[in-house]
Amino acid sequence: MTLLKKNDPKRRWRSFKRHAVLLFKTFFLASVITTLWYQCWVRGYHLPEDDENSILATAAALGVVYAVFMSLTAAAASTKYDTVISTLFDENKRTYLRYRDERPPIAVHLTIALLSVPFDGMSCLWPYRHVETGLICVFVTSVVVFAFWFLIAILEQPTKSAWVDERTPKDWKDADVDEFFKFGDARDRHKVIHEVRPS
Image (cartoon, rainbow, N blue to C red; front, side, top):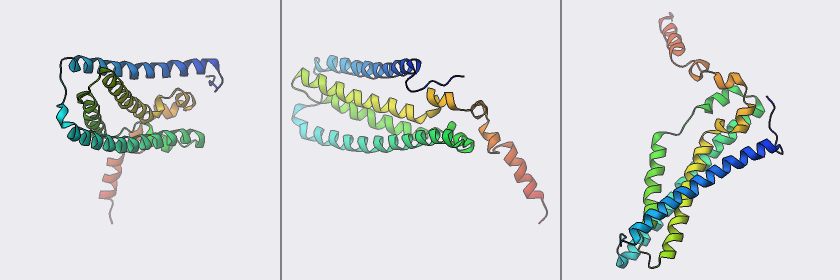
């Protein structure tokens, strides 16, 4: 297989299409949220205007927690992505397989959702006095939320990268992790032999 280089027109076109789809999904979903907000706003569905201080305090607290958690999550996913790239340069199959199928615990994804929904929801429920202000705030907040989601999803799965896929040896892709690390039956057999061996 011929590797696609940085200045290869095919690679540039592939990269353009991939990022165009990413941007389209981000702005499309943000537009959907903004449209739903508008339908609620014109019908008067929002938090009371005389509780702005309480709303602001809650929104600020959510924003800080959301920013810190997402930053840490993105940093961890980026580290994993860089590690997988390094294994290809170092020809380190063991470390590659260590991270190839690894995914964050479900609790991490649940926490992202539990922070993202109320964070974006607060921007939607804010008692805006002008529709233009609401449209801008809700849309921008939604773009940030979805952009973080998609970014972390990409970083969590480095083997999905076309660059990584092209440069990964076929036997690395097909290798059975449990067999390579002697999990399951192989490890159980070793345990049995160890237990019955006379001291």
